Length: 297
Image (cartoon, rainbow, N blue to C red; front, side, top):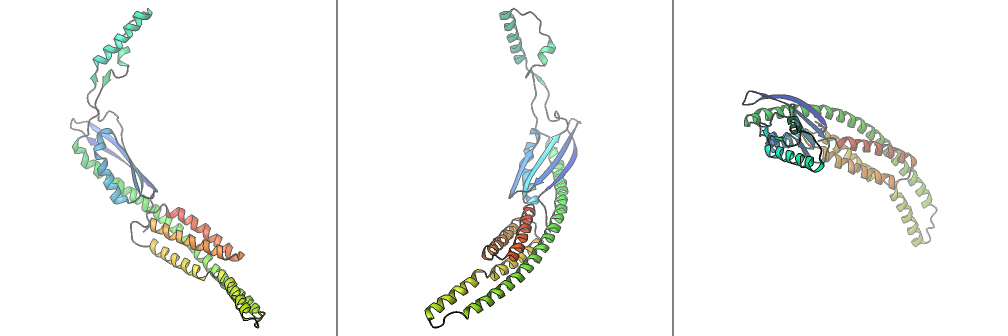
């Protein structure tokens, strides 16, 4: 099974406080591709004590990806304590205003509504959420992860279909390339055999040198070993992508890198136009496949 690293899920949750009031929460989880497992948690201060537990659950079940989990309280005052007046701060404001009046001679009276709108005249403390919230929130997290996994599995099926189509093209192109390479070798062998007949056999040292040069020319364009290794990597990729494993993206990426290395060697060794055309088509498909594989867990 192929599982994508990308997905999104959302859940609304209502919790009851000890005083009988309710707290409305919206929980969302978004996952993007990443080389490793990373998390970003955005919680109300009152719920931050749950963060480590959230991260453990997410890592155990999602394995890879950059996961952003957000808990939003629909009423921002849900976790705030009673509002407290700060008379000392209010008195400081009054003293400052009176000093301005005295020094400038500006007349005017300060009313209550003028004071209550000033910063820090009132304060409140953020409260830690009731411990009774832990179980329902963690249960909601499990449900949210389940929904995210469904999305990632569905996206993984799309990735698998796309990769299968690309590797069908790669297989056909490699088959055609192999035929072209075989024909090229046969043509070169025929030419070399013909040239062998023109070598002056009376000078043994010169004849041996000329034969070695011809054999070297033939060996330079021989890409049989590269083709064999490429086809072996191709078979390994097809086997790996259908394994029943939860995490395989990095392994698939390494295999694609090896395939790219072999096809680069083929194009470097052999300058035949037909072989190069097939090799370029394979490179294009490999590059697109790597883009897709980097989304796989």
